[in-house]
Structure formats: structure tokens, C-alpha cells
Amino acid sequence: MQKCRACDSSINPFMSFGKQPIANGFLAKDQFPKEYFFEMQVASCPKCGLFQLIEQPDKEMMFHGNYAFFSGTSSAMQKHFAGYAEMVKTEYLKEPDPFVVEIGSNDGILLVNFAQAGIRHMGVEPSANVADVARKRGVQTLNKFFNRETAVEIVAGQGKADAFMAANVMCHIPFFHSVIEGIDALLKDRGVVIFEEPYLGDVLAKTSYDQIYDEHVFLFSLTSIAYVFGVHGFELVDVHPQETHGGSMRYVLARKGMRPVSAKVGQFLKAEKDAGLDKPETYAKFKAACEKSKRELTGLLGDLKAKGKRVVGYAATSKSTTVLNYCGIGPDLLEYISDTTPIKQGKFSPGMHIPVLSNEVFAARYPDYALLLGWNHSREIMAKEQAFKRGGGKWVSFVPTVGILE
Ligand code: DWN
Ligand code: SAH
Image (spheres, protein in one colour):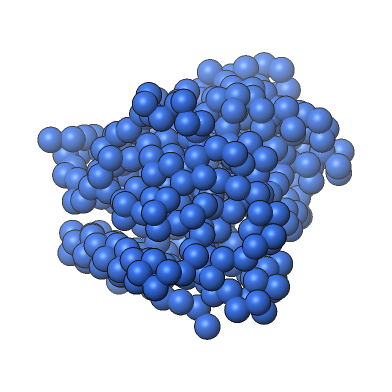
């Protein structure tokens, strides 16, 4: 029997996505024989509601000097983070000379907005290559994993913070309690914790099972966040649903009793109960929906191949690693994957070893179909790929349902 990573209750995996490689482990041919795989099983804790991976590879295998994801590759996300910064500045930085800390700050996509406004800030980013990009943009960055120790080091150098921020990283860190202890050590009495992460409710509703991969050790809900932070004396004071990454939730927390609690918190907690997020049947249904999605997607790609159509993947996302490996989609079904990130180009996709090529290759000779692996960026992608569509090209989509987009 496994133990919940947050509350130590016994948990049982309800499904396995099979053997999975490192999601961002794009590799060269000579690295194929040594590629690492783990069995990706998932569970939902019956006591605290935390959705989690049973096993996660060591953090140094995922986050290092050659990390393949650069936040700034999406222009829509740059705009999104400018809005996030604006919200923090206007709502929560009311004291003179404020200081903010962001973990998982990557290439500085959020903190650059504070740096340019002359606000004292510190990013904590363990992947050295993306941290270097941030520093070159004038964003103060500590090349470390955030935990209690890192927080104490920051306080010794800069004093306590007004705001602790994060985006798409809290769900990456298995030592959750050490992170919250770090936040507690870092924040002023009235300091706020603000972070946004893929939302469990959206993943279940849209069967976007590709949000589950090695880095995402957790998928959060208000229920699980309220529980885990509650243990450390924090409470949810506000929440803001976001469209990013196919449906995210922005959580705002503060020490108990320090700030007014928005009515939205109670409303969303109730909505989670109504949606059955605490019920085993909900996860049994999700499992069946994932299996159906897999059957339909492999069926559709098989049909296209049988008709002699050229099909490629579009955007070599981390999420695509789960889909391709779970469904067994390899170079026989997808000729290559088009991606704009130089560090991924010329390499092969993790596990299934599909070549990753530049967007210029895609534009030079459009395929008949493109599988929309970066479905969360569909608005941005559709806007820039109008010539593909005009030339008769079609998009294959699999979230929320499998089909050809008209
Ligand atoms: O949580 C995480 C999120 C924030 O980012 C990380 N664990 C890793 C990463 O997940 P992802 O790789 O699934 O992120 P995206 O933003 O869905 O995918 C980015 C990839 O898509 C990049 O390789 C670039 C590519 N892309 C492209 O080729 N053309 C993206 C866009 C917008 C495009 O037009
Ligand atoms: N915040 C950015 C990046 C998300 S990707 C965005 O939303 O686009 C997750 C990032 O978290 C990676 O850059 C990774 O190196 C970093 N990370 C992983 N574990 C971490 C930890 N323990 N402390 C701080 N950052 C971490």
C-alpha cells in the first residue's frame, strides 16, 4: 500500500499510463539504449483529495542545465504573465519597497515585469540554462531548488517577502511540506502566496490526461490545496480560474485570519464536491475516458495512414510524451513533430523517438494533417498557421474529444 505524499493516508493507484520516459528528455540516437523509463501510475487520496503520481523520477533527471522548456516560446503566455504581474502589483504590493519571490521562474517570463518596474525580486530556478536567459534579461535568479533552506538563505540576504509567486511549478515538487515551510519562513506576516497550476477539475472534465507526466507529480484542486496549506496555518483567500494550459486555477493564500476570504472560495469548494472530485467513481470514469480517447486516436491515425496521408505532430510539448507513449504513437504514424524550440530540434521525442524538426520544415512542405499536440496554444497556433489550412491542411485534435477540426 502506498502513502499519500501530503497526509500519509493509504492510497491505491486507480490506473497506469504504462512505461513513460522523462517528458522533456528529447534525445539523440546514440542515447536510445540508455533511455530511462518508469511506470506512471496515478492515485487520488481519499482523505485530502490530492491527485498524485505514485512514482516520480529524481528531480535532477528532470531539471538540469539542458532543460528543454523555455516559457517565452509562446507570445500568448508572455501577455498572460504581464497580466499576472499587474494583478499582483495592484492588489498585493501596497507597502513601500516591496520584495517578491518566484520559484520555477524559468527564463524570467513573469519576473521581467517586476525587474522592469524596478521592484525588488528574486527568482529561484534549478535549471541553469533557462536561469541564464532570465539573468541576461536583468532578472535576479538563484540557481537552486526551492525548499526551506533556500527560503532561509533568501531572507538572510534580502529580508522577508511581501509575495511568494509561482506558476506551473508547485505541482512539480514532491516535498510539498518543505516548500510550505519555506514559504512560511520567507513571508512577512501579511504576505501572500499566489500560484497557478493546471486544475484537476479541467483535466477530468476534458480528459486532458496529457497533463499527467513525470514533472507533474500533483494535480491540484481547492480541496487539496486548502488541506495541505491548512496544516501550516495558511488559508485560501481567493481563487481565479484561468484558460492557460487548458484550464488552470490561480490560488491566493495568506496566514489564517490575516486577510478577508472571498466568497468564491466556498463556491468553488462546493463545485468540487458537486463534480464528485472526492468520489472513486469519478476516477473510474476518467480512466474509461482515457482508454476511449486512446482507442479513438490510434484508430483515426491508423485510418489516415491506411489512406496514404502525410501526418505530422505539431509542438513537441511535455504533455505529448504521455499521449505518444500511452497510445503507442511512433514515427510510423507521425512523420515528425514540428517545434520552435532550438534545443529540441534535430533530436527525437522521448520514448517513441519521433524526429523533432523546425517549423520551417513544416512550412516548406505542408503535410495533409497535423496532430495538435500543443492544443492549449490552439488560438496562437491557428492564428499563425493559416496558410496550412488554406492549402487544404487539417488539424487532428484529441482534447476534449478526438476528431478532425473543421
Ligand atoms: O508545467 C509546465 C508547462 C508550463 O510548460 C512544464 N512542466 C513544462 C511545459 O509543458 P509543455 O511542454 O507541455 O508546455 P507548452 O507550453 O504546452 O508547450 C510548449 C512547446 O510547444 C514548446 O516546445 C514550443 C512548442 N510550440 C510550438 O512549436 N509552436 C509552442 C507554440 C505556442 C507554437 O506556436
Ligand atoms: N513558471 C514557468 C515555468 C514552468 S516549468 C511557466 O509557467 O512557464 C517548471 C519550472 O520549475 C522549470 O523551469 C523547473 O526547472 C522549475 N523547478 C522544478 N523544481 C523546482 C523547485 N523545487 N524549485 C524551483 N523551481 C523548480
